[in-house]
Image (cartoon, helix red, strand yellow):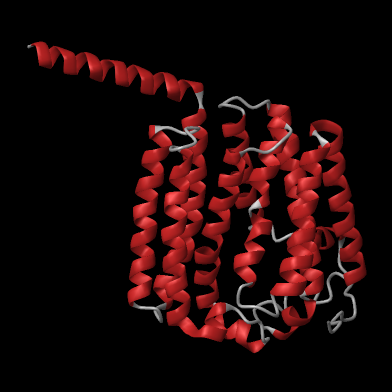
Length: 323
């Protein structure tokens, strides 16, 4: 990889803090934490110790931040070539690669220590595996060499639910792997919609994203098929696993219909940038609300409410029948 560090600029400490913060790509992290939280709530049956939740989310944040900083170091050459990313901390010279690497290592160490000391070693190892997979498999081997980079690399972004589950239970179950699979299948439609918008940027730096290599029509067909796969997968939590109920099931179906509708509209007009943007934004909303549905459905008060409504309906049906 070509080094692209430029002469460092002198900055005040506030600017330095801001630059290191930007290295972590903070806008990406909240989605990872939402999936972690959903897994924890399902694993805990609607009850999660607040200290465990706080440490797990903090450790997950540090692990994700470490991975993003390392990604910035590795991709500094292509970031320098693209006007859109040239102002990032490393290609702009505000942070040197060696300093960024030290920062990333410190973040990873703190993350693992938090998990090992306050949660369990297994969840810490899972968090570290996410960093390794993201950097070694996705960033190094796949991103610049395969159109399947996002498909296989999506496993890295699917690890947070496993971390959250392991933080609560100390192990993994079929449910945790279904959560993993939901994120895994959700990733291609989400990221390929973004890639459609940034096709020229990726082509400029020879990154073989699907739209660059196979074109828009092939990409939206694949978006369509992955969308059709992820929707039934979300319903596995209701049946056969039975860990979620009618509240989550309703949310999953309504969101799924909307997701399919947007993917279909893009399939009919694959060169429409606005439709790609709409699908990309909706995919974020989809995952956030889906995970919120998981949390709400797991709460004891929700179970009580559903049971009460069910009993009242049965009573009403019986009254009507005997009337």
